[in-house]
Amino acid sequence: MCCASAGRPFLLMKGVRMKSIQVWVSEETESFLPLLVATTTRACEINRRLFEQHVRTVEQHNQACSDELCRLQHEAEVKNKRIACEAMEANLKILVDMKNQIAIANKKAARDAK
Image 1 (cartoon, helix red, strand yellow):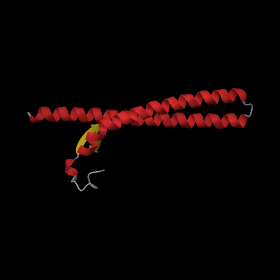
Image 2 (tube, helix red, strand yellow):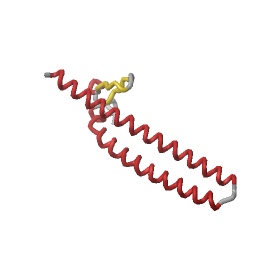
Image 3 (tube, helix red, strand yellow):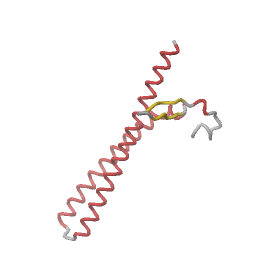
Image 4 (cartoon, helix red, strand yellow):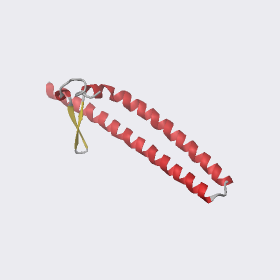
């Protein structure tokens, strides 16, 4: 739930700089980020295994199938699944980067508060 819909002011959000982009993260989002990273990591692992299994199945099928149109369709499926896998892994990298930047910002804020 975002801060606005929870009736909280946007002042509770902290800015985190990620590759020259300012990202605003609510305290609520920050608290769920480790769980989000963990579940996304697991989803990526499962997705990668399913993709590899699909590739093996398609390779076996293509060895037995002589229909060129069928082969092209399966190659397109594999390509689309590869893109989806890579997109999920890219999203995971962004989440991990965000989590790391928040940790750095929190350490800096704690140092500055002393």
